[in-house]
Length: 153
Image (tube, rainbow, N blue to C red; front, side):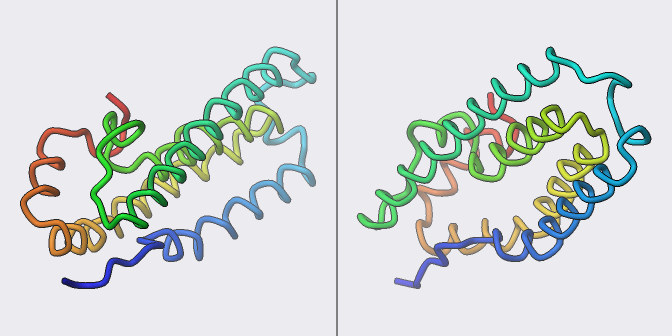
């Protein structure tokens, strides 16, 4: 049986996404008025961002816990967050954590990191699928056919 790459496409995505995110945060702090959602500080954006961040981090860490158990037991994980989408780690960051950060920082420029992240995901994910198919075979093919790729539900 082949060896499974624990990190998947995460490092490939991070090489572009993390500098983009850092640059967007830096630029947003330099030109605050240019990149704001609202001209004045907004409690609603802040509260929504905190709620979205909490949800995203819970989704992310529950996924990590299941993934580590699956890797330890060399088992394909299809329960929990993996039952609602095939890529809950990437989804939680791109759909919840980054948008939450953009709301907390009141910056639409930070939100562009989600778009960049999704594009990178679509570019690199095929290699991860190929690796999982080789490793788990028919079980993975069946799971992939019945589970949404990225967007939960």
